[in-house]
Length: 274
Image: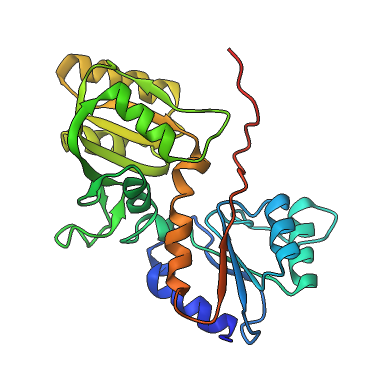
């Protein structure tokens, strides 16, 4: 069986830590690099239920998209929920590895996986990684296209059917009869002003992302009425990033490591009423 150090090297090559945002916390969180790895579980969030799944299955490594320790801590005592998670993993001999914004900008990365899940043909990034503008490969989000145009309402149904179901569902801003062909996607939170401006400048008919707040969404729709711009499709943060998990698991295909993609819905919202 490969060692944890060898597995980590595979992920570092696919998702170089140097491409992560300066505020991010990626890489190996806990685990002995010399330990052998036979089973790897992939999940979006390192929450308690996912750790339960990893330990019950006998995973030697848990790979998550979101960091457990995003903000600096001075200790990991088991008297805190994050400290307890670290203790549980170490006691069971299960390592934890995170690929976050370095997986967001990778090619193929989180947004590529989202686009493919929606049946789109992927083009270049919405915001190229600095220094990658000419190459046009690495960066946040992806421009993509449908094989054939379809109404916004049908496209929204396509999105809902293609992603894990969550209580938040799929929200749409725009005329449901509007024809859609060119699409911009960004897994995770995508209402950054620079991203929205780049999507509009790129001429996308619709923008699919997560965590769209009221003011950026309202301004984007008003700007569209004034001078053209995309319709908006907002999905749960978790749902937008889950399609990346099988892509990450495929990095270990063909070897001796057994992999599993968690199907637990770890979106924090559990109900929706109207």
